[in-house]
Amino acid sequence: MMSRHSKLRLALFRLSLTFSLIVTSQAQTQEDPPPAAATKACQILNETLPGLVFFPGATNYASDNFHYAATSTQNSTCTVEPLTNEDVSAILKIVGQEDVRSPFAVKGGGHTSNVGHSSTTGVMISLVKFDQITANDPSTTVTLGPAATWDQVYAKLEPLNLTVVGGRIPGVGVGVVYDRPVEQPPAVFGEILSLPLTRNTTKARTLTDLTLGASQSPQTGYTQHIIPTLHYTVPIMRAMKTQVDAAVAKAIAEERSIATIAMSCEPYINDFAHSVDSAYPHSPSRPVTPGHPTSFYNDVADRDYFEQLIQEMSGAIHVVVIQEGQGLPDDIHYPNYALADTLVELIYGENLPRLREIKERADPTDVMGLSGGFKI
Image (cartoon, rainbow, N blue to C red):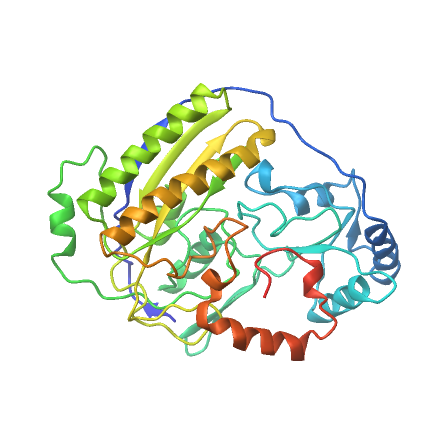
């Protein structure tokens, strides 16, 4: 949804308990031989879509495979950059045909932290050409291409005196639809501003200014997860600090390439107030917010270690969240943060049977099963 105004007034409150140790080490990469099916698919694609398929050594190949973190990047057999919906259809028919069945991935902005979700050793379908940003008359909606990033969206719409609500850091691809902004009580930020904050960036600002001010450099290792939480009580906050301290101490003692382990609280207000029917269940009656544990590290070989560490840390905190009455064992997990092995029931909840019915009708040969992500 769209709102018209001269300047978006946005105050962002984010509590972060961050404990860091900077360690420099050489990033390691792993290369697997290309799947035979992918090699065949790339040959057919190159013949079918000349000029749109790229192989190792090409500049487009490198940018198509690039991700925010090296730990979620893989070297594909080839990349392909469709220009039209018809191109996308042709690509999926080729990778899914009976004598090919090649693994593939679809990449928008490339900001996922899960390897295999938008990366592959097979065919990388880069949506880089689908980056349109169009305000529709009478300016109540905007059409966004999945490869557009939120910082680009804000910059394009601000001269039109328009905005949408999306990501808060640069480089994050659109890929989803966000609800319209919620009017906040006038005094909601007064209590926040009265806190003894070590850093205060609260001010009236445009979304472009906010987003570019949160600029992040590409990382070697990046792992995150989600702890669905209604409200952040003092015992929950204490549990967060305890678990972060313990995780940092463990990683140091075991000589892992730790850079940062953090636990962020994101206490959004009425975040599901304008929920509409979608694959992701977000009912206004259960407005859980994303408690957000993260880790950054300097060696891709430590990916499995830090995924396990974040999983353990999240589980321990979630126990306290449940004990405090601020969460349930089966609360929906925000998919943008969730670890790759999160149960699909925790991603789609009661919508899962309906989604599986749709999949059976739309994809009877399970072409999408050749890709990554949370499989239904």
